[in-house]
Image (tube, rainbow, N blue to C red; front, side, top):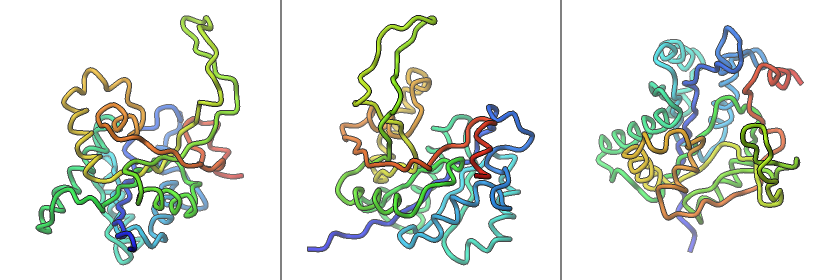
Amino acid sequence: MEEKKKAVTAVILMAGSGKRMHTEEKKQFLPFHGKPLFYASVERFLAWERCKELLLIVGAEDQERVEKMIETEGWRKKKNVCSVKGGEERFDSVYRAILYMEREKQKENAVPAQAEDTVFIHDAARPFFTVDLLERLYRESRIVKAVIPGLPVKDTIKLVEDGVVRESLERNLLYSIQTPQAFTFPLLLSAYQKFLAERDLYKKKITDDAMVIELFSEEKVKLVQGEEKNQKITVQEDIELLYN
């Protein structure tokens, strides 16, 4: 029997201030091939036939600006594209996206947490991912409830405290993790609700969405091969990647 296709919502996170870039413009709006950087992620998901909607999670001060871009580019003629005001921290922004999705499902008189719905969460500062990666994540997401891309660490990694090496970590067990990360909607909703109930205890430990699943659910997170070129624009030196 053929597996039921999952409906995919892409959540593109672009509410950060980009303080580490030390540029006047936020990194998500830096020029890339003549357009703001976040366009690359939006257009990749728009071109991917499995994606039904995109939620752009933006800072409150940028929402009007982004709404004008959505209208100018005519993205809503292709798919359901919405801007959603982000929160103070990355995980706050993700949770606001989750709540938005839940409200929309209720408006449609649908069950708020349908098992076939999958959420792809992506950082707008990663413009180089391919549809091939999306397809591999999607295929795996039809089997498991949480799947992320990663690459084996090439360098020797040491655990250092107060400038002193405590131990050398076993390199063949270490991976550098990327986005997009894919999760079923019910799992994401449940894990985030549990996490935010204990927010103050765990907020400094959470650096990606997979960690929320690891800490606040019984679900195992599956890893698939990432892409070497799927690098994140984080510091000023990374801007060179946009022009190579």
